[in-house]
Image 1 (tube, rainbow over the protein chains, first blue to last red):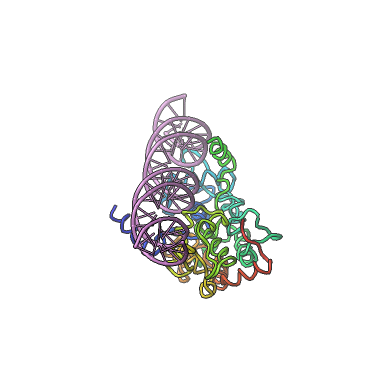
Image 2 (cartoon, helix red, strand yellow; image 1 turned 45 degrees about the horizontal axis):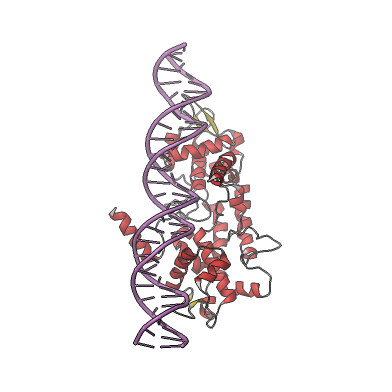
Length: 166
Length: 166
DNA sequence: GAAATAATATGATATATATCATATTTCGGA
DNA sequence: TCCGAAATATGATATATATCATATTATTTC
């Protein structure tokens, strides 16, 4: 309670919210990516991971993560098995998928490709004021997400050139 | 009401929310940028624009826009005058500011520069799995926002190489 | 084939964000 | 110098998003 009040005061002082989620991706997408990353590193057909453990490893609330994983599973981005010895895992085929697939399912294509100002009418032919300047960034972002496969990322983790999230 | 139900069903079907805000920037930043853009094109010291009119032009709810403008005004990103003949406007100095200033005030630096997975511990030295791949995009994004001045954008509008939002 | 396990499905709640409403201050003009 | 216009400040409400809780279904193991 006191914390909330403090936060509110500080927020006003700073003219912004504290500890708000970062830009670029939605919180949901971030959570999903974290989970997929963990699965890429730790799971396979013979070693499935339960939401419970995924939740601990990624610091994402269990039930919320479960919903995200269900969506991914429904769209065959991740694999799952019910019952004892069950859990989530990634098949080699899953690992070949680009990160884009994850974001696509969670946030949706429209969200990813939408004009930066959120203008429906904005297009190459009738660009908004920011369009031409932001286009390179957007294209780089999207092509990066499309190029990077889950597998690649897990290789980095194996050779320790990157680290798993807490 | 019916609409809400329809939306919910469709959302479930698609596995995602419909018409959700785009990525990259927060809705607030988008609104603020739209307003600033309009001001850059339409206002000067002798021709101030009231929130009411800004609201109409940008399709942003009046009271919400007011709050955003107040924050910008408090931080001298935009100028304002109270009373009759008052309103918001941009001075030449205001126009020299980069778009980054707007986003900085509305979303905050932390939000802009935060790790894409939202990991506090992520850094050059201890990068998360996405860090190295996303860095170019992030840097391009930030440098673009820092380079583009409000003035530049208004020039585009004048020579009609871009269009004002509805 | 019964019991336990874990994903799936669904609904309810909390929090953050966006939106609305109203009071206060400041300024210009009659 | 008083009235009205407009920004400012603040609080209240609604909506979207994130979080929690529970019931259902499928699968393994004994």
